[in-house]
Structure formats: C-alpha cells, structure tokens
Length: 318
Image (tube, rainbow, N blue to C red; front, side, top):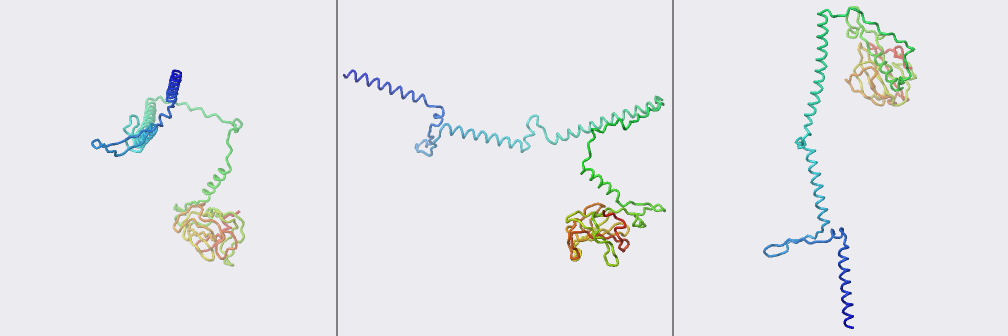
C-alpha cells in the first residue's frame, strides 16, 4: 500500500511540474512586455534608497519611440525654418535660384537680339553687294467670306458685350480738345461752347420733373430705384461733397470751361472734395435724402458760365 501511494504521489508531482512549465511557455510576448520591473537608485556607501521607478518593457519602448519621433520632428523643423537648409547638398539658396532664372531670361533675350543683329547685318551686306531681288512679292490671296467657317467662333458673353459697350461710351463722352483757328487748343483757351462737350449720362431713367427756371427748378429729376450708381457726366474735380438739410447728400464737380454739374438727394457719396474724376466714374448712390425729396431719385443740374442750363438739351436720359 505504501508503494502504491509513493507511485501516485510521484506521478502527481510530475503532472504539476509539467503543467507549470507549460503555463510558463504559454505566456505571450505581449504579457512579457507588460511585466513590471523596479529600478532602484541607492547610495553606494550607505545603501540608502534614494528613488525608485516602476517600469515595464512596453513603457520604455513607448518613451523611447516618442522621444525619437519628437527629435526627428524638431530636427526637420529647424532645417526647414532656418538657413541650415542651404547646407543640404543639392538644395541651394532661393536667391541663387532667382538669379539663375533672371540670367536665363537675359541670356535668351541676348540670343534673340544677336540673331536679329546677324540678320540685319546680312541684309545690309546683300544690299551693298547688290543681291537684292527686284521682283515684287506676290499679292496675298483674297479670302472669300464664303470660305470662312464661323462654326467654331465662341459667342460673346452678354456681360462681356455690356462691358465693351460701356467702355466705348466712356471713350465717346470724354471731353475732346478741338483746336481753334489760331492753332491753340480750345480746351485750354476757354473758347469751348457747351455744344462741344460730349456728356456721359449720369443716370438713366424717366424724368419726373423737368427744367423750369421760373419755378426755381434749375435741373431735372430722374426717377430711379434706391442704391443705383450715379456717374460723373464729364472729367473734373469735386468741389462740393457734403450734407444739406434740403437736398441731402450733394456732390458737385467743376469741369473745364466754367461748366459745373450738381447731383442731389444721394444716399452715399463716394468722392471727397479735391478728388479728380473721369467721365463715367461712379461718384454716388441714389437715395431719398433731404427735406425736398419725395422718393428715390436724382436731381441733376448743369451750370455754364454761372447760368443754369437745361440738361435735357445735351443729355439723353432714356
């Protein structure tokens, strides 16, 4: 009976030992990384524990990886943001690149100029040697309109067409200096008549009130929506740009040859006194300001040699 008990206990111990060894071998790599270790710093002479750190392999790996990435980032940032990048082989200086580009352009221009000079000298030599062809060149072939294909022509956009029309009208309504009989320019001599001017329409619209000097209405009222642009009728200098109780925001422009234009009841003024404006420049925005205004409109006046004239006689407001 004792022998059987001994054999059983021996087998049991072997089984337990085998299980322990298998459990140790079954530990994963991740578990081994997470095993905790203690780093103790001691005084060498007194063996007194000064400090201790509880670490694992995983923590050390993470700290070292973070420090490495941070060090690489700082190094790259220093190289990119400082002149140290110029010492990198093959990078070069930015100013040197710009100088090389300018030299390349100048070299190309000099080559073209040298080629043109060579051609010019060759033509002179041909003229001196008499190697000039006396035959007339053949006239160019006449192109029939029927043979021209217009299928691939792109249509002009409405905005582009309107812009071209406005520019043409601006050029048309510029003040043109006409020469007088003695050869001097009438624009500078002061002999221009008001009919010699080409006025730019300050605002298009229906006239709600016409010129009537007897009723002290020295201009025309043009009905308009609120916040429409008001344009200068001629080149000139702004002499009035202010607010008045009766007429609201008023702007007045002094033109050549004692001609003055006045724009009243505006909501916004874009020009100040002393500003030079050209015909067609936006100087204000229509409004309903002033006690004499009964709705959004523009009151426009023309004064020539100190006398009010009817703007409708010189400007088409439709």
